[in-house]
Length: 539
Image 1: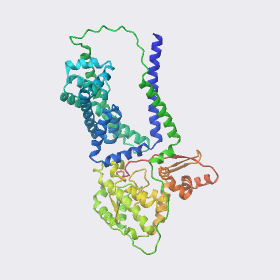
Image 2: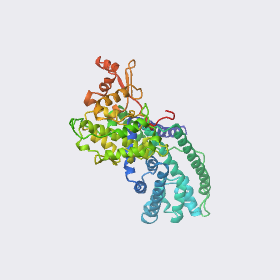
Image 3: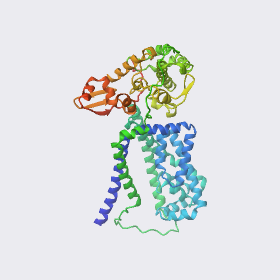
Image 4: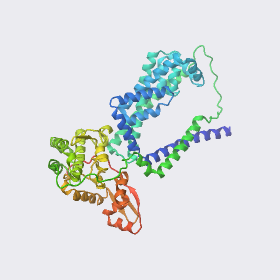
């Protein structure tokens, strides 16, 4: 008896240790890898599918679960990629179709093979007996209390006497509570992973709403499951008249089996922990995989004394009117002047870009990027309810090809990564391009001008390095805190100054002295705040 209890403890302990290791590994991976950027890439691809996104996901769900792939990870993924409402709809359609297809296969196409598999499950005989008495009602209860894995149960139900129509309807309705709970958990998980990897952090109000929603979903699902479990136990414990009455078992401890599932879980836990450790040690190199592309900085355009000149005074007037001294924007007021902004954008679309000289081109590209971003925010402002540029669908943000400069249609990403970085040996543009977030460098309350571009870029760079939000050097601790712009675009700063530290030292005499003396501080990346850079009330 003691030996059996010891063996049982070992099995249970192994499962718990494996689960804890998996959780630790996932947290470590979230802190080490650019999870937020990876999720953004996937979300952008899905957003690009438009209304077909949930349809494609539902089709993948059907194929996967019919192939006996567990549905839980897919359900969690739906919450991450589509949100609670659309995620629930996509999974509900996919799971119901999967249940129907597997049912028909089990009943007509592969009945003998499914019957052999079902016999291995000790609960199936009791379930079959209960369904013969209760029909679709037992199916409904089993969807609320899944005694058999979802993918396998769909085939097994095809062997029972339940009719197809009531089976599908009962499955659809009674899978909804669990579906919504898993989708909602997946949604919250994606928000948490994005925040953990440096993405936008929802406000306290939003986290409170998320918590209330999760507790409500758990409470409803738990209550329904409890009722279903009691009703199901009554049906499964009541034998049919033609069945022999089972004698009660004596209270003898039975050993738990060390299953293949336990072994696989343990191997997955060890593998994940190893991968997480490697990712943590090499987090800088791995982070570059999903970051901005590395480019060679070159000066492509010549500076000429004669050439077309573009008038940025309309944008200059808007920035002076609606941008505060800290670079925050009064978006509500700017929205009322959106016609003026649009007229400037229309002029940018007609600008003689190809004929401009070096400084005219760069000033136009910087101003256009910032003005396009303002227009994007106004498009999704939603009466002031927009909290972050990341709340805008990924496919509509930086990769949306909708912005016209001199007859060329580009995305914001293309303007920065293809039109500016490869053609201007100028890392200071990263302190001038503004992504409408608090963590971005501040938006100047004036337009950039070709005639004073050098002075404006230098002033902007000094402003950034004079503020703790973007730069802080702790000489006593030997630590320099840098904006993540230095991480994401590290190669740009290296090409000009040799390293990110050497570039930052141009604006910090104390840091420059430390480097000159051979005292190289360690780098810590400052948290990037993705909250919208809107003016606080009263500023």
